[in-house]
Amino acid sequence: MIKSKNTFLPDFSHIYVESEAKKYNLTRDCLERFPNARIVEISDYKSFFNKKSQDFQTQKKSIKLILAVKKPPFIYKSTDILQDGGFKNFYYNTPILNCLYNCDYCFLQGMYSSANIVVFVNQNDLEDAVEKELLIRAFPREPLVLSISYNTDLMAFENILPITRSWINFANKKSDLIIEVRTKSSLFSSLSDLKPSNKIIFSWTLSPERIVRMNEFDTPTLERRLSSIQLAISKGWKIRLCFDPVIIYDNWEEDYSNLLNKIINSLEKKNIYDITVGVFRMGRDYFQRIRKTNPDSLEYYKNYIDENKIMTISQEERDNVKTLFTNKLRDYISEDKIHFWI
Ligand code: SF4
Image 1 (cartoon, rainbow, N blue to C red):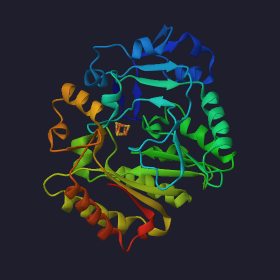
Image 2 (cartoon, rainbow, N blue to C red):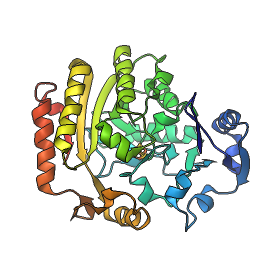
Image 3 (spheres, rainbow, N blue to C red):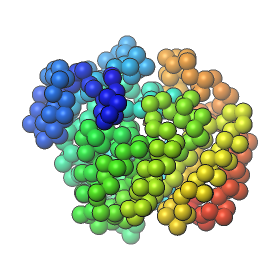
């Protein structure tokens, strides 16, 4: 995959299209976007995407795009590993599988054998499932909160297909629905014409510049993410700051303290909806699969503990993370607005 410098638009050499996906508008829009790509029709994305003996990191160097029709389920209940931000009816869905970015701590490398990106073009089916779930959610007095950017960074895709925009427009028409858009992208500018809505939480993951450089490959710099947040704030959107995962290394405290100082000095606290803080955690199966295939990343050779099949850092290290964030953020935001996965 070559990145076009001017537009940050990846150039997909091949686009694989399920026969059933051909009739959808998103397919048409996507093919128009990449007139030079070679189009290959396939019968079922799974037989292509789930093929054994693919190498995730080799494919990352030349990502192909797959347009497919999602089959049920279209919506999933939150897992223990996901941060629910204190919401009781917390769900996620998967408009896209895989990501344009390549964070070395990302569980997607363990989840999928392929790094190719699958876009599900039957957006209406995903929306219908949300409508149905709204009616049967477990806590009817509480809103249904939907994370739309769980197995991908959806906003990073916004200049390819405006899927985040579609979900924002959908949420604006539904009562009791809140959508969380988790991102490291600096593409908020592509949404800045929209009217701010309290149905949407833009949740930016922030890390010290060293972590951006060493662990979050292909992602925008910290400065560019902060500029996007400032733009979103200036337009009146609700912002969640997400420090997840906090990575432990020599001097991590100094780097994270500097990061928090920068945030406290550059983002006005009244505009921050809440903050989530998490540490490295990954299901043991995914962790072991990545370790087998990704020996370059030091993240998989640190001392983790296995806590009920979740690989994570020691309790002492987790306590240190909690103490640092609690102390630094004490005067910035009230304690009940900081959610820890620790
Ligand atoms: S941005 Fe998120 S989904 Fe994308 S590679 Fe990084 S951790 Fe994974």
